Image 1: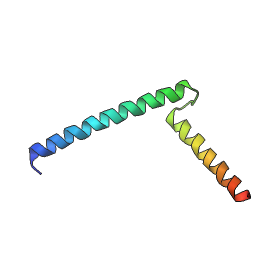
Image 2 (image 1 turned 60 degrees about the horizontal axis):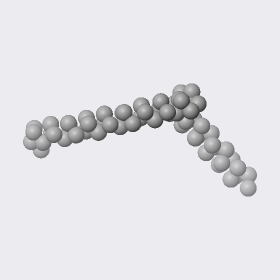
Image 3 (image 1 turned 60 degrees about the vertical axis):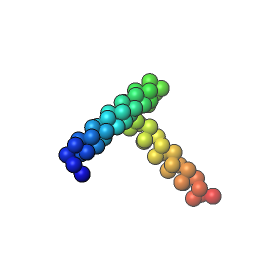
Image 4 (image 1 turned 180 degrees about the vertical axis):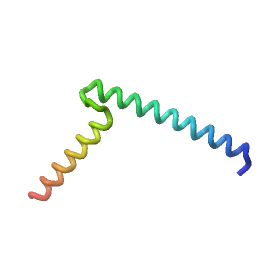
Amino acid sequence: MSPEEMETKIAKLESMNDQLQAEFDHLDTLLREIGFASGIETLKEAAKELLEKNKDSDEAN
């Protein structure tokens, strides 16, 4: 890969990273606004708890 191609690839990756970071930040803000105190981190914890409860419920049946 030539240096020019590498620079083009890097620029595309940086742009994608910027877009993903903006989406992540927006989602985190929305989650905080609807009551997830620590945003995405709190959502992940809640999802893990639900999965564990469902797992326990399935094992009991």
